[in-house]
Image 1 (cartoon, one colour):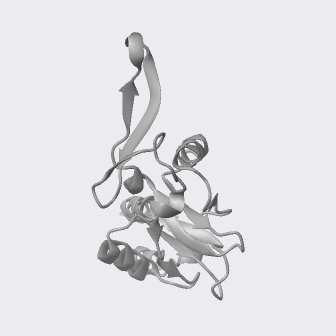
Image 2: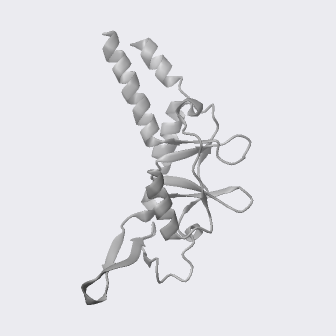
Image 3: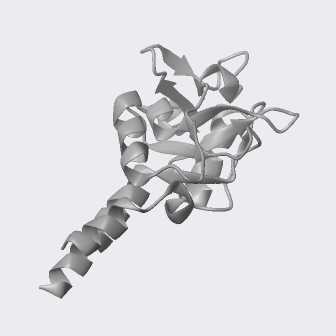
Length: 165
């Protein structure tokens, strides 16, 4: 059991990260970003400025509660709103500037590829987030580690331990 535990604790961000990283330009609208995340079957992505620097992360937590409004004459409307992280109800269609840079989580937490799994988990728990960006020398994201990646590693380690018994 100690061998399985030690190999699990030896895992690093490089072992767990997903690549390539799907990014979103900061000028993307909320509607476009929601469609991009949905089409990519991901729950969040780094937001990049025009120079290729990561300026934030847009995640499903930023789209807390989507509401579809009914249209006139009984037709189903296409209007969409969501509750921003600070609690304000934002009507995307009526918003004069619905660029995601206004709704994303700024200053994402980054880690190096050598960051051990225990530190990854501590950073996520401490910041109440579900993903960390893996960077090298403050360049753009080289990978992304999600809480699901860590849970998958826990499940694999538990399965290996159970098979050794």
